[in-house]
Every structure is written in structure tokens, then in C-alpha cells.
Length: 79
Image (tube, rainbow, N blue to C red):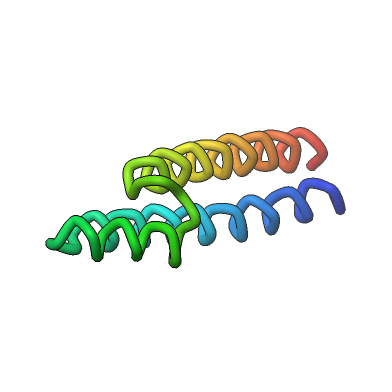
């Protein structure tokens, strides 16, 4: 039961970080001059392009949903 609650909490934190990564990538992609976009990508997201940050954000969100689902299954199984 303890590990299921811990996994659920970790999944929630990972989800928050994934959403932040995704939204940051979308924000950087909306910057109009290409030079400013490349500078913002290097400074704020640490990727070569905003597309990489968006992809990473989606993967992180999918991982968080998977972990949360597994934690929910473990919680129902132990009860």
C-alpha cells in the first residue's frame, strides 16, 4: 500500500514536469524570429529545437499516465 501511494505521488510529479516541458516547447515554438527562437530553445529548454522539447514532454506525460495506471492497479489489488 505504501509503494502504491508513493508511485501515485511520483506519477503526479512526473505529470506536472511533463506538462511544463510540453508548454515550454510550445511557447518557444511560437517565438517568431528564427534567431530568437533558437536562442530561446538553447537557453530555456536545452534542446536543439522546440520540437524535441515537445516530443520529450509527450513521452514524459505518457510515462506518468502509465505509472499512475500501474499504481492504481496495485492499489486496488492490495485492498
